[in-house]
Length: 118
Image (cartoon, rainbow, N blue to C red; front, top):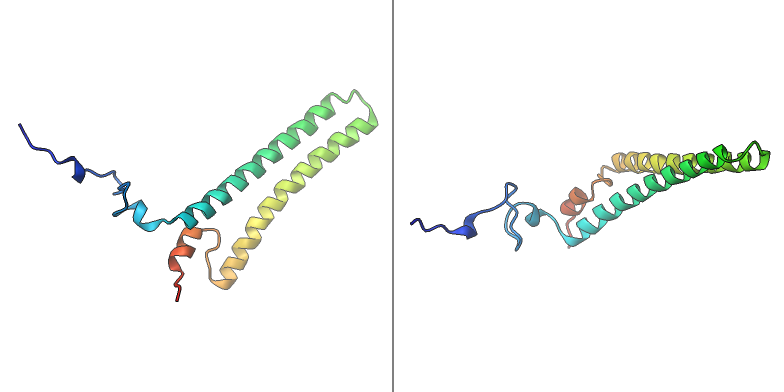
């Protein structure tokens, strides 16, 4: 019977839960917090836009021809679209500022790894 040492087996990326090489060696908690926060805020913004726009559309459909309800529904849909435009433009502005400063702001992992503290 062969003697197999299971401690030498790693995942394809080389990640080892206790540290070592691979993903764990290049990430830290601050990087994970920033990356996850950006992702969560983007997802929440997209979902909020979708729900707000759908609610405005449903209000318009159920308005029954009443001018005030139709205007309210149009305002909801417009506000949802403006919110999504703000999210998109803010990412564009951050990207432009990052390129102007020579810093990759939208990729916090490389930003944190390139920092040197004295």
